[in-house]
Length: 125
Image (cartoon, rainbow, N blue to C red; front, side):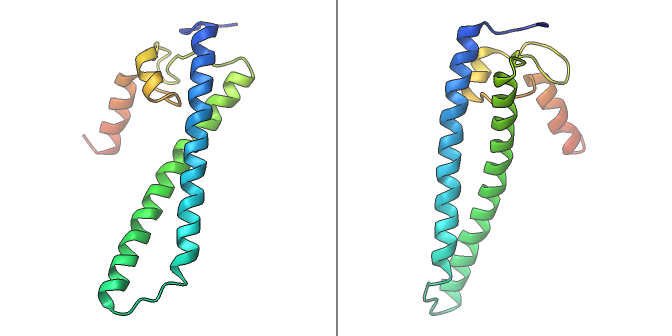
């Protein structure tokens, strides 16, 4: 086993958080899908109704994209735990990701510094 930032008890704690988050996201995604199915049955009487429904649909699509991205990261972390490869270390610089950060975002793969760097690169800073 290579370097590790977390002990087994902490990894088990993160594992539980990941499973809880996964369940919440899957519930949210099912709700969005159900709402979209019922959207086609809606009686949209005027342009205002249509605009409101379209805006809600657009927001839902954005939320769904974000949730799917997060779900992929959760699955990535769960697979690493199952294989015994989860370390709590940043996948970019190998620094420790604080347990405090992991408790808030258990699927985090980067430390705060690397996450900031990536965000700045994306935003052209």
